[in-house]
Length: 129
Image 1 (cartoon, helix red, strand yellow):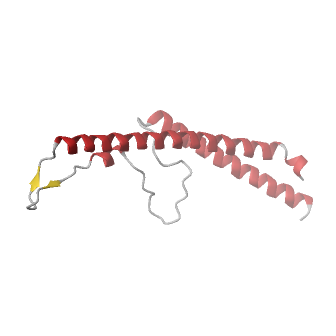
Image 2 (cartoon, helix red, strand yellow):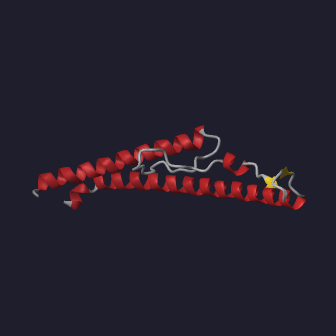
Image 3 (spheres, rainbow, N blue to C red):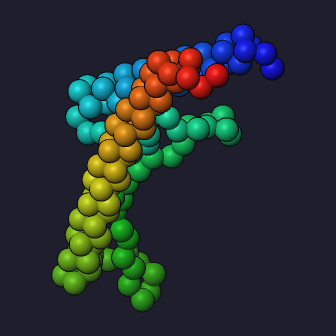
């Protein structure tokens, strides 16, 4: 490849990285400031199957558990079963909160990385070629 084609290719890569960084930063900002709780899926999730990826929600932790007696009839839970169910719900909620925090940190770092790489490639393309 000659120098002009290489320079154009590097410029294209720089602009693509910069545009991805701007997009990711904008979506991260929207998630931070306009949502009550940060989503559990990242801003740059790759969706190859065509349907939206599953992300866990708080409501998933509160499905009622059914308890049955020996004869197959439903029954009320015992105190130990109630405590265990509450413990499972707290554990589930804590897991979702940790997932939100790690997704937020990952989104911020990926957004800044893409902005930095795009700006760096465009600023220093004359030294690369």
